[in-house]
Image 1 (cartoon, helix red, strand yellow):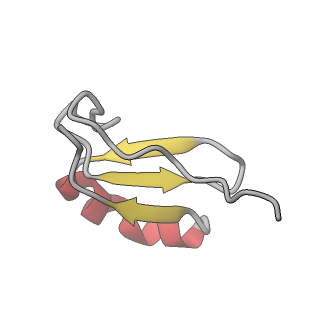
Image 2 (cartoon, rainbow, N blue to C red; image 1 turned 90 degrees about the vertical axis):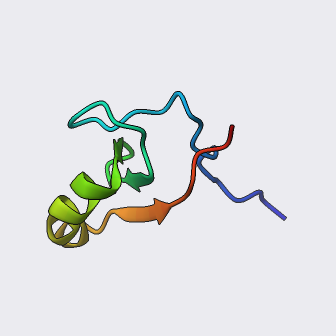
Length: 63
């Protein structure tokens, strides 16, 4: 059975692509790219990410 592709868990080193705060959300775009967001920017961009059919996952960064 083929394996499932998964994104690695966020770490404390992962930063929001908009402001540089600690990332809490990973958005994987249908084109294969990914964006990392803090909670604030994830909320701000949530509607557009849904329109783009991005796969959004939230997590606390691993230490």
